[in-house]
Image 1 (cartoon, rainbow, N blue to C red):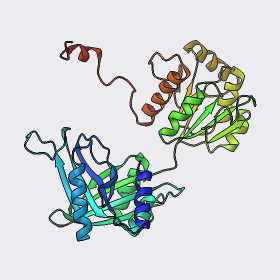
Image 2 (cartoon, rainbow, N blue to C red; image 1 turned 45 degrees about the horizontal axis):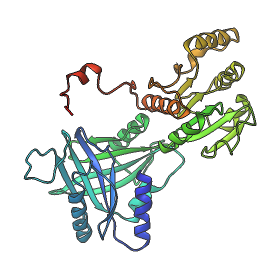
Image 3 (cartoon, rainbow, N blue to C red; image 1 turned 180 degrees about the vertical axis):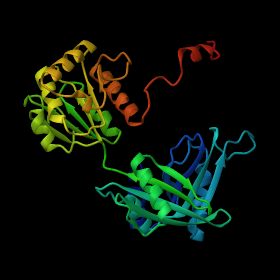
Length: 357
């Protein structure tokens, strides 16, 4: 979403229009938008993005127009409001700080440029006049180099955020607040087996920002005509596939192949590579057979992350689309470090007030 916001902001700047940028730099409790959520705004009631669930955007836009006239940033503070006479506030039980600043080409360059290497974008807010902070934007590379230079403590915290792959806010004793936003290459979904479910799986994954690769040893199945949405389609045996794809700790592997020879070849080809996830279709008894074959071939499966099999969350999926949905849901849960269960238990549901018809 941020890429689209910066693309629109760049278009406005290129057209000579003033642009203000709003960023959620701190969250206390819960929030409908994540840390780093943004809005880009220009005159004529034009904006893109959001910083809440629609509760405060009007006030943020009005503030943005003030910021553009003054040429100086403002820090806004929002929290839940129970008084119906007060129109501006959050619906959720939390508080957010929103930085609104004039967007300059230099700031746009820091946040919008997509470098291939891992780095952290940093927004540092230093208290100035009431609600009017001094704002500094910088980039910290994976080796610790900061451009422009930053204090050692901020660089250290930035590298910690990069390792966690999560946006973070750190408050310092001198009142400074730093928002760290890791920027990493997109995760790769590597699908072995050009099965019917691969088609919707690729579509779901691309919506979530994955680079998608579909592979199959059968040339008639691994075709661009059958998988038009995939970033790459490879008709090859797994040992060749891993030489053509950058397999890393940001690679999520899905096996949709029913042929044990191909699946065994996949595991042997992945040996020695660090991957984030492996999921495979088939019943549990099939996995036991997989383990036996690996042991007989001298392949240590403990080098891999847990092989999720049967693959996917249990949503009762039968169609290719439902199966694909269950698979990508499980992958997202693993990626986010979550168990992937329901947010409410049946017991909690039964205790809710029932609505009569």
